[in-house]
Amino acid sequence: MAHAAFPQKVESSIPRHNYLGVGFGMGKISVFDQINMGVPYSGLNFGTDFDATFTFKKSYLQISNVLLSGNLTPYKSESVKKNSISNYSENFSIAHYWKVYSIQPSDIYFFAGPMLSAKGDVRINNGEVGNSALGYNLAGSVGLALKSAWYFNVLPAGEDQMKDFRLEGSLSMPLLAKVFTPTYIGITEKAVTESAGIIDLSSNYSGYPTNYFNLKVGLSLTYFLPNKNAVMLSYSRDYLKAKPVHHPVNSVNQFLSIKLLFNLK
Amino acid sequence: MKNNILTILFVSAFSLLLTSCEKSILERPEADKKAVFEAFWNGIDQKYSYFDLKNIDWQGVHDHYSPLISNSMSDDAFFDTLSVLVDILQDGHSGLYSPFNDHKNPGFFLRGPENFDERLLVDSYAHGWGNVTGTINHSPLREGQVAYVYYSTFTGDISEADLDYIIDKYKDTKGMIIDVRNNTGGSASNIFMLVRRFIQTETDLFNSRMKSGSGHDEFTGLTKTTIKPAEKTYKGKVCVLTNRKVYSAASIFTLSMREVPGVTIVGDTTGGGLGLPIGFELPNEWQVHCAGSQTLSLAGENFELGVPCDVDVDMSEEDRKKGIDSILEKAIEIILGDK
Image 1 (cartoon, rainbow over the protein chains, first blue to last red):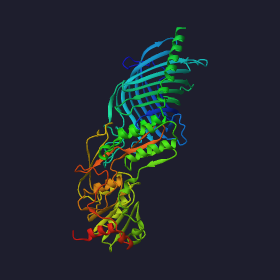
Image 2 (image 1 turned 45 degrees about the vertical axis):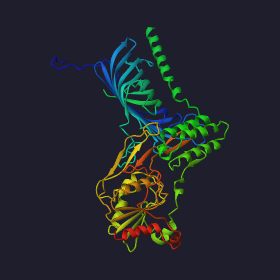
Image 3 (image 1 turned 135 degrees about the vertical axis):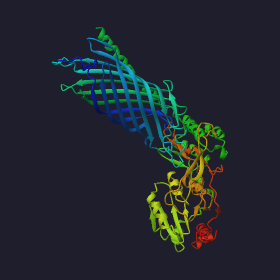
Image 4 (image 1 turned 90 degrees about the vertical axis):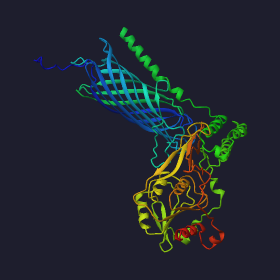
């Protein structure tokens, strides 16, 4: 029997969102970075997918990180000796989702909230472009994240009457960003000084959706195992358009991953 | 029913979002020869840093060569035509790279006599290049009074341990000769590792500036390069030997050593090449190099066409026949002389 002097444990109204997810995946990167590319490049990259979600009474926090690397080659190249670019992509975000609407008894939920994101794509041209072989777009941003979740049964419901599948859709976009891109000629101003660095952080601009557009949409299917852990198959598409004064970058990253979700409760 | 419709709408909207966007990115630009020529010409026009110094009429080059380009010409003929434009820059840092041929412009060392004979050095001075520490050949000369160091390339890293060894080994000599003849450059970081061994206090070396926009005269402000001495330094006299084949990082090294007290540059003017090479790719996937920065002396001089010497000496044929390296002998004379 609970005593009034001790607060009752408050149950979250967000079902099944306390998980640590660890997985791996494959990304198809397509990019046209005009600092060191004369044509668009594309290729498969591989990497890790990590996320963690923690519920509160009417909201949940999601921390996620995807790291990819691999080689890209010119799209539809007919050349006998193809150029290549090494690509590294890092995406880290923290989003706080509030439940804004739900449809019952269909078990459909809609969430929205702010998102902090750090995104970096680095491309190293392995050809003959010398000192300006490095192309990159790095950005720290604040934005908006939207998500929906639909819980449904495929298998006969167990004793706990919990649904065994969840289909989620997500959409996120930075609204304010600080974007770092290479200098006009692609090498740092201090390239011939003793303290030369390969990335010049003074070459940056303030990003808004008009000059830094990064829409990420995702779809995931989660199967909840009887032991309360889960397996998630997810697909996302990350569309980026960075428009500094010189050398714009356009890219699309399609990422397919499989994750094991470990129940944290 | 209402919920099912909502779900279908939601999934359909998602599918639309997922299938859009990529096509716009993966559209290749025009890559016919006319378009590639324009991309090549524009890339050089906007990035090359020495049009004014070399008095090159790049617009005139466009007007002359553009009508000669046609899609019916072979790739090889097209490559040869662009190579002619590369040569017009008269710059060792310019080049064109295709899957079937590379064209560089190493003509910088043809502007003067060779002034280097490795066989003569090995036979008469270096005793078979007996001592090699890292990438540095060295040998004592004149009964150990003079240290002779031959540094053939700035490519590959020098280690501090190697430099410590050389400084220790020759610390009691009257002077050190650093021969960088025929050194066509490499990594800029090696410049500072070497120069730090010959300064005793913080020293300004040179100024540099980068292209910052498409105009021929659009540059960043000057950035001064200043370095601090290493823990272990050489305190005797120093001569640096140069010839026309000293290029790029080796030329910047020469420019830097001009600012070091007690250093004499001996030999022939270097080949220059003080602008850092940068590159870009053409719509047909060929790649291009050109200089994209300028390095100036502290006094503001632009030695892109060659860093001059303090003491000009050419190797004479008469000396060569006797097994004498006139430039090296002059350096020995400076070190062992009273001055």
